[in-house]
Image (cartoon, rainbow, N blue to C red; front, side, top):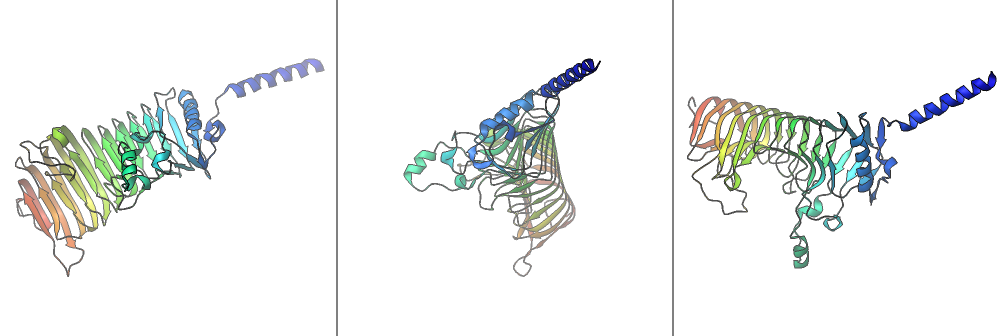
Amino acid sequence: MQKVLIGLLLFCFAVSTIVVEGARPSILNVVDFGAIGDGQTNDSMAFLQAWNALCEATTAPLLRVPAGKTFLLQPVIFSGPCSSSRVRIQVLGSIVAPRSRDAWKNGTSESWLSFSQVLNLTISGTGQIDGQGSAWWTHPRSNHLKEMYKNYNRPTALHFSQCDNLILRGLTHINSPRNHISINSCIGVIISHLNIIAPKESPNTDGIDISRSSYVKIRDSNISTGDDCVAVNGNSSYIRIINVVCGPGHGISVGSLGAKGLTDTVEEVHVRNCTFNRTQNGVRIKTWQGGQGFARKISFTQITLIASENPVIIDQYYCDGEQNCKNGTTAVAVSNVIYSDIKGTSAQKEAIRLDCSEIGCTNIVMNRIYIAPSAPLVHQTEAYCQNVRGTSNNVTPNVNCLSGS
């Protein structure tokens, strides 16, 4: 009898061992796939192996980037679709790009970390993503270096394409070579509690760029960059930006739209309860001459301005200075734009600029706006407008082309 019991116990132990060994762990750690995390060893292959295990799993495990380590990655593409109904990544440590352009495996990469066709992806944590962008911001002086770098594109740090139902939460993103986060062709995105940081002088380091996407919500975040804090580009709709602190940077922009004669459409963009602290622009709509399409059903409400240089601006003559921009016979139509409950200070005399083309901007509504000079002993504030139709009520400075002014 005793031998039978011992045999039965051994059998049960063997079965349980097979079950445990055959099961996927609930947490996958990149270190277990060979990542070193010393900030110098290339951990790209280990991350890809960890990603493959995560993407192939059907039980929705969590992929963890552990705290206390710094993982160096070359440009990497994390591709889907994945087997699991949810894909979760927790970043507690630091992920860094190569320090110099020469160290990049592929100097023509358009992005550093790219996610493609991954549904229901969540990336969260208290960690940091460092694009090490300073080497890309300066132009090389010697002819030898200019020749070496002439085909290099400054890459986006974190790029998402066709990633529906995406959640980004909690991370700190610093010093991207170009824009920090790009959302392209995604439906259903929630971005919250991010800190995005780059020097004021860093070129084109947008915080979050949105294009060809819809139902995107950005909230409760701080963005300090050398370009737009948030840019809503063509073929995007139903975008909400709530409780974002921007500065330094170029403000929150719809556009630019219609470059090179393209047709761009943007609608249902709503910016609320945002603060602009010493930004180059506040709330901005910018379109190129010669483009087509529309920007409509846009609102900017409960906006606070702290010494913003161009607090409120519509620019239908946008030109980035790199091209010989010419006036066109067509333009992206701007209509149904509401500005309300905007208060604060302007660092320049011109606090409101509505500069529309001959096609004009229609149904522009301004209510309860008070923009005072940041240096009242030096200048007062004023508004400029042309080819604009709409209404205003209780607006300072006075916008004389709107009825009710």
